[in-house]
Picture 1 (cartoon, rainbow, N blue to C red):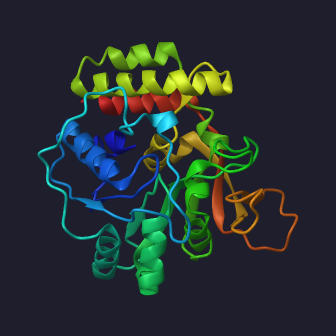
Picture 2 (cartoon, one colour):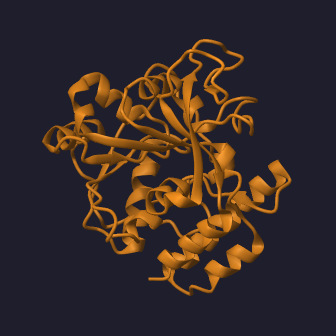
Length: 294
């Protein structure tokens, strides 16, 4: 996700990058974000470390998927780019309080803890939010961490509950969509042909993810989850969505983190999210390859 966003300076004025504990602990996610910035030559953007655990629950991680480093498949080192001193939650609050109304888009691709905590601390920040475009949730695909829950939502369902009810425009890229953009061997070779540090890093990470996801799902390759958010912002025509009511289960041990999507409007609950259910995979990979050439 970061590499595609960093490769699109004409479209995005990136105000900052916030990190949260998720696939791996916070000390690794903030380091990984700085490595990606250095790899892309974008050390002009501040990286802010956020919450070390979910709002009300213990942390779960996913090293079995992403490796012990969180970005296994590439060379790991200590980045020279400094970590900002301000906590990510305080950065979000400060940035939004100083921003114009409806001017900032938030793009969370991990657990929603930082944004939810910022809203709880300072609800007035929501007037500055144009839209939240997030990766998370599942309906028809089922869960990837429990039988019914996707990892980002299950990690902090209480935070997700806050986001679903915060009232700002919300677009959700769930597993239903991201499982349509699979990294086949042919697509990996296309990135290898970029013959650049960014291309090499993408190939390394994709090859690592493929070993796990191809075995788990029996598919031709691993899905590319997080870049779908940025691709949606760059070319929304590649995606099809439907306004639905989406609620998050926060009580049941059996279905914790389940995203209940009223796709067919069988309740009286008002739609609160644009639920993406279809992706033009060929167009997505064409966009990704074209942007990462430079």
